[in-house]
Length: 170
Image (tube, rainbow, N blue to C red; front, side):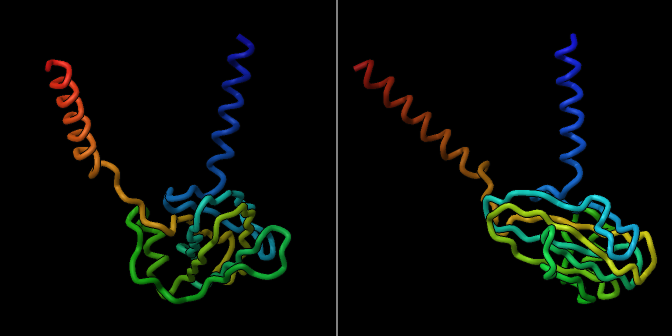
């Protein structure tokens, strides 16, 4: 009884921790800064990449905010948002996509190579505080869908079975 309760508590704590950072190819993740020169509510974002991935950030709430991303403990910015407006959104969150494509709200992206990261986001609060934003991690390589190859694989296995059966019968 006690062992099951400990496992349940451990799983609950693990699930909360998993929600406190963006997930690779998991869409937009919302965060907030409460004050200038203070890292965001969910910073640092800690993750390990096995392959290259894009880290993207966009303001989506108060016009005028600029966000800066640092590696935890670093003094040189990894990236700083600007008012550029990217060509297209991602289709998984209309609010975040609006910020990403708008030249009135700041956005930025950087290609990260494989490795372990701990990133902190700071904002200038120019549009007001608290200031919300979205981040996401997207694989740099396109994933080839496996289901397209499954009929070919199934057909090959079936032919091997038929050939083996005929060999036994003769």
